[in-house]
Length: 349
Image (cartoon, rainbow, N blue to C red; front, side, top):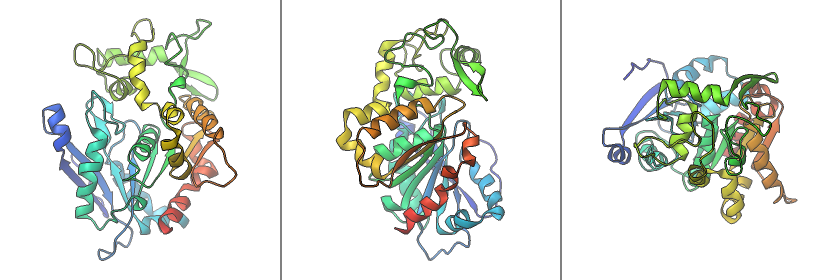
């Protein structure tokens, strides 16, 4: 346990999870950083923005957000007065849990919606209705918020998700996990990139994955690839997350890949449009840069193409937007800048 900072307007919340403690055989705690509305009126009930940090972040991000409030203006400042901002802790036993129930991490999504949110709503004056609970997140937080909005529409009324982890596993970064052969090399035998900047490769998948093998053998590093193995895949015979690809050769394991299908948002939409299409049309707001540093735009484009097949003349409140920018610079685009106003309008209606 690390000491938590004392910041005016921020409170720290912790709850022992019965679900996760039972699954993991030890005490597991759910945590949140609760940013009170500016000029908080304890007699008033408020909606809540549930924020899922990206990889490496946790609930302590609530403290930094509060310090920036002195510079807030316009819709951002108004939203800070009109709602609670609740920053969640997504850390699991092997990195970011993505708040997905999984074979390795346990019932992370169920614990959030069945235990943490009811406890928060019991302590704070929060409006207990889906329309008053929205999700925001970037990168791994972006995938988490999409998953939560699509899986628990009876809990969350809308999501604003940006630069999410792969949303269609036919482009898991650059690899089709169902039809590909290797995570390391392309059809020409050249190593595939995992990170780029200004068009130049900064790290290959092989380099990143082999580094994780040093940090935590047998997929236990808690770094990005091992976190995906833990969230999406089964356990191996040693009880650790099974590898999607062989660590030395990069050869894909088709059996493990098949296990990932239940988390493939694009495939879920294709197989069950009656369930998922209405949610995409009304609840999902997704923005990603066309030059995403981790090639996450590749999967978002496939998702956008699938949604385009179901386009209709009437306007939908939900959207999927690919705009200029990489994983970080996309924050400067007007589509990202518009999100606070959109959230504010959602709460008003």
